[in-house]
View 1 (cartoon, one colour):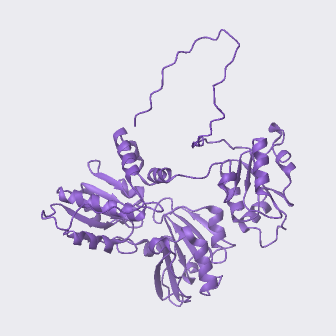
View 2 (view 1 turned 60 degrees about the horizontal axis):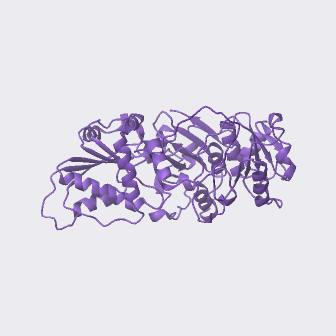
Length: 467
């Protein structure tokens, strides 16, 4: 990208104590958008005042502690009340966070802080309204005192900017999922092309530019392959051979970086630009890029996570290319639905415990949650693409389908990779556990009595890091 050019300026030694201010027309009523300044504020030793006792308050405490801040929570409920989030209660009891057991008072903003800043708090997070707390009043008072404030579900009251544009969200996903070497190798032209293509994409699927009546027969080939759960050693030999010999790799954004690192430097890698509201357009974009490359005689690999036919839309892509007159090769991958429980020491079947496995999705067509399955005691149920709506899924299982709250379960994230994490709990506590430790996608949710055959949980939940 080319930086904008500004008029050159010459800086001269000051010869006068007179200061000037910019000539700003404050009466200009023309509406303009003023973007927020992106900053990273050092928070070590700062006092963060967190108002509320719900799950979000617990999560705010966790984030504050991670950056070295000293969170203090304030709420009038008794500590043993069911309204107090379990993880938050534990942190208070362990002395990790400060606790004021009463309702919020305006003077708290000027008395609960550090001595170095005359006892003003450094930041305020309003996680829920309670006891007559006026979030608008808190926001206005913080603004007057120049204290950063964040109010849940109210962007107009937020001083701490929390909204992301779709472009920034997509770019952050690229930075997270692309291998570091691929990012390092990006040229200025590559970045320009990425942004130019992004700006022309829409949430409405474009009309296919390729007509079915084309007389010219495709010259190249395409292979639809599964990358397995994430560890490169679990790729099949056939899939690895296809990957190493491809001219163009079209990858889903959740394909692990360890797999993408295998892509040869001579090959072109394109990662799906899927985000909420653009999934269908991004899917068609991938298909059309593949078809164009095939017609140029290139070898294309469509790289998917897990197995292409297990909630991977593989059959849909097969039908699309078949309709275009292209024969597509499909190579299986090891699905995380079966391998992730194994890496988490969960036998999906076990005599006298589980004699059947059910694989479900937590995300239906167009994002609509599917109807959860009924409870079968001898069944291990694996939910893919469900962790982002874990709370509603668990509520549906327990309240709608009658699953007992004591049924053991686990969230398995980045299975088979070095940064694998397993959170074990029960249906009663798993939501609180994930809210406490945070989410680390991609992950899946396993429920059933087989979850405690090899490992049982002492307490509300346990967290296991690494393989």
